Structure formats: C-alpha cells, structure tokens
Image (tube, rainbow, N blue to C red; front, side, top):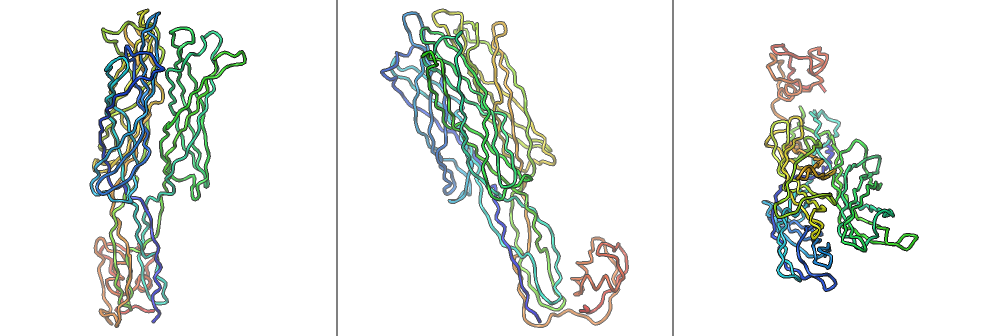
Length: 521
C-alpha cells in the first residue's frame, strides 16, 4: 500500500492581544532664559509629546518620549504688555499595565497631553503641571502549521473548507516632508518674531496599487508673529498638499490599509525678501505616517479525512484568531459659544484658533460604535484693553458621534481615532463662536476559533469495521453524503454511483440509500 504524502503549510498572523491606557503626571519648574523679558502673565501653553521608543515587557508596556512646551506669555514693556514665547524640551516615560503581555510582542501607542496648567513662581521661573494620557494596543505574532493536502494512490477521502484570516503585509513608518513658503504682503508689518507655528495634517488618504503605497494629505499651517516695530500680532495661514509613494512588495489594491499621520517635528525660519525686509517664513515639518496593510487571505484546509482501507489518526488543533470584522469613518461638526471669563477683556478680533481631540472613549453596541470625546480649544484674540492688547480663552467642548458597523456586537473589540479636519472661531456678540470639523475612524475586531487538521498518522494493521452486507439507510436531518461515507467506511463516489445520485447535495430527509459493505476500489 502506498505511503501517505502529507503536504503542510503554515499561516502567520497577528493577534490583537490586549489594550490599556495610563495617565502620567507631568511636573517641572523652568527658568526663563536671560534673553527673554520677565513673565507678567501666561497667555497659553502648547504641549507636544512624541513617543521615541516602546517596548513590550512582562505584563506591561514601557513607553519613552520627548515633550516640547511652547509657553506664550505677556511681558511688561514701556508701551504696555507685549507677547513673547519660550520653548522647553523635556523627557517622559511611562509603564502601562497590559495583562498577559510578553516580551517580543509588538504594540501601537499614542499619547496626548489632556490637561496642562502653568503657574508663575516668580518673574524668572514658571511651574508646569499636566496629565499625559497614553494608550496602547498589544499584538501577538502567531504561526500555526496545518495539513493542506494528502497525496496518495490509495482511497483517502478528504473534506475541505475555506478559512479566512488577516495577514499583515506591512507595518511600517513612512516619513513625509511638508514644506510651506509664506510671503508676508506689504500691507502687513515686518516679522519681529514667530510666536506660534502649528502644522495640522487633514484630508488624509492611503492609496494602494501593485507593490506600492501612496500617502496623501493636506497640511494646514497657522502662523502667528509679532510685528517688528510694535506689539501687534499678525496671523498667517497656508494649506499645502503632501504626497509620497513607496514600494512595498506584496501589496495589492484590494487590501486594507489604515494608519495615522502625525507631525513629529517642525522648523520655522524667518528670511528676507528681495528688498531686505523680514517678510518670508519657511516652514518644514516631518510627518510620520504609521501605516498597516492587511490582506484577507483565504486558504483551503482539511476539515476531516479518512480511508476505508487505512487506519488513519487525525490530530486537530483549535486556534484563537482576531479578524477585522469591519471598518468605517464619518465626519461631524461641533459648535459652541464660549464666553470669556469676567477677568478677561472683551474680544474685538480673532488672531488664532487651535485645538485637538482628547479623552476619546468608545463603546460597541449592536451594529454601531459610539465615541465620546472632548475638543480642547485655545483662542488668542485682540481685546479692547489697550494695555493688554491680546488675551486668550480656553474651552473644552464635549462631543458624541457614532459609526455604523454592520453586525457589530458588544463583545467585540474596537480601535478608534479622531482628529480635527478644521477649526475656526468668530466673535458673536460678547462670545466666541467655535466651529470644529472632526473626522473619526473605527475598526472592529471579532474573536473566532478556527479548527483544522494539523497532523495525520497512519497506524499499522488492517482497518476494522468493514462489512460484506448491504445496508439500507434512511437519511436523517443534517446528514451529508460525506459523513455517511465516513460512517459506513465507504466513499462518496461509491454512494453516488450505487444510488444513481446527481451529486453530493442531491439527498433529502427520509430518502433510502443503499450502503455497500465494502468500498469498490
């Protein structure tokens, strides 16, 4: 009797293992450089954290990063209060508990400063305190071997099925450079010093083609500078298109791509125009595109196998898998009117409005993912007080939105992202009207168990259980021809032939079948 030739293959996949979040307290005292005037009043603080390294350890994830603080403040001068900015850089680290995490697992992480407070200790020293929120998702890379086929000249019957799993084709960071060249018109004063420079990616898109991925986005640039010969603050803006194509072997346009675009560094320099006046601002930002590309792979696996003439023992294995159940996106508009505190003077002109989405929470219900979050808004405006000249207002605007995901269930898991597409402020009566456009993106994962044959062993000796007599069998509900062939130690082909059946699906309940006692080979 010919030996069995077992053909095996292996599947590599990435398992969404666990997720968690943690808050870290940021605290530090910082001196004002000798090149800067004394601090009289803090106007606003921008905190920009960047994760520089992440490592999965036993039961936790270790995160390290850098944070840049831009402190915009008012200093007393002869004509009144003037605006200045000072920048500090610091480091942070944090442990996030993740139950069951092991070394060599991989993780995605992101962080945001959700709250930041500043206190003036004295005119040359300030104290910064904040809360850094870090979220991470831990993945486990798995591999299992399965029997794909059996080659034999004997009578081996196989029952196959198609299994689908998510295969990560690529998970990498792609850097893009966004460059903006802004020329200040002659109707505006010359540049004294840049006070604020924000670059915000929006209209993000990832395009796939054969062995290629293209990243595209617009970058909204907002600049505030102090005039060279006055206390006046001037706002400038630009919106630039950024695109980069990179070759990644194995990528196809029917795959699924998702990721995020983050600004991880910005250089802003002031130059002179043809007349020698300070009217040129060149901005260069490094944008990190963290891209993951997933393919829905379908493979034929053996669900069951037997032989009428061989003693075959099958080994089966159950595998826990995470599959992406669905994805979706939406866009919402959030509005609110914010009234300045009584201590602040009345706004007469908006200079700059910036914001970010923080405190994002999620919940899956039937067919839907619900998200709650906060738009943290900072507005600098020209005020009616000639001594102050400028003031600011901060606001936390809550929002709720949802994304429909067909057949989503509460016991599934989800990953969500939300970012600002645009934000603007206008003066309405004695209030500041905020309008923010928020984009959201959702992935929902289901957890499944898949069973397949991972090994086949042929035992020595003749197979027992064969009978010479013919059996008449009444088909029961749920019977299949393959199951009956295995049960009575024959073959599907023989049952089709002896019962003159058109095909394996052509049997019905209570139908009488002739079952031969021995397979005819």
